[in-house]
Image 1 (cartoon, helix red, strand yellow):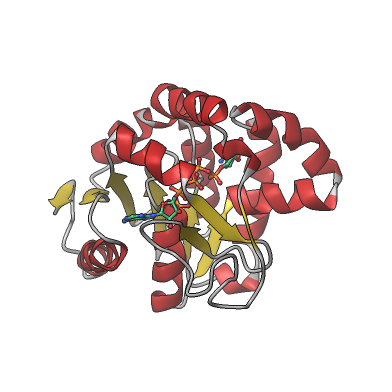
Image 2 (cartoon, protein in one colour):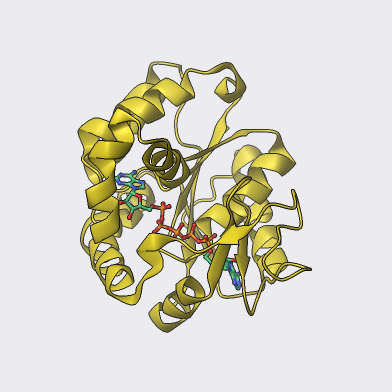
Length: 227
Ligand code: AP5
């Protein structure tokens, strides 16, 4: 099964994608995580992507599409995957359709996490993540048990460079201009499910699982609304 998460920066895509991937035993593919890792390791991809990410712009499709197609061909993605942060525009969505079609598959469900803009801004301002396992935290809504320390692996927590207020503003603009049109793209294909992403994390996770189970059972979600 192939699940795509859609939503603005801070909507909770990373948080929910990792929970869902673990529950379903599917690969979790986060282009943001892959790109940040490449930037930290100063690989060729990282050097090319860094400036775009710091400005809150999308990294060019030519750099991102191949890495996702390649990742999808790895063994742990053979049964399916949960994609978070990809696709980000219509050309990427078409490239994903083509790559899945070549495997006799398709996007089974696109889960849109609906969250109002002021909530997104507050979430990004208070976000922390583990510098080792990348588990996400929030200083108010999802704090670690011990300040500054990851509950899961004990690693130190850090804040993302692109969570500065000016960059967040640009990321939101880019989302509305380039990524929001994907809602219609998946709605027209009958695979869009909307979930209220403003609820507490465990409640959102329950709603997400419910819409995914429905899609899995072939109940034609489809363009459903939860919460
Ligand atoms: P990416 O890493 O994908 O960032 P994003 O889309 O801006 O999304 P975020 O990771 O900021 O938010 P999220 O929705 O995952 O929320 P999270 O779960 O962390 O991309 C970064 C950059 O990489 C892009 O700007 C671009 O440059 C580049 N890039 C990536 N993919 C690309 C692509 N395909 N093409 C081109 N360029 C690409 O949650 C946020 C916070 O809220 C956390 O603190 C969390 O604990 C908290 N929280 C989550 N859910 C809830 C809840 N229900 N209630 C309360 N708090 C919550």
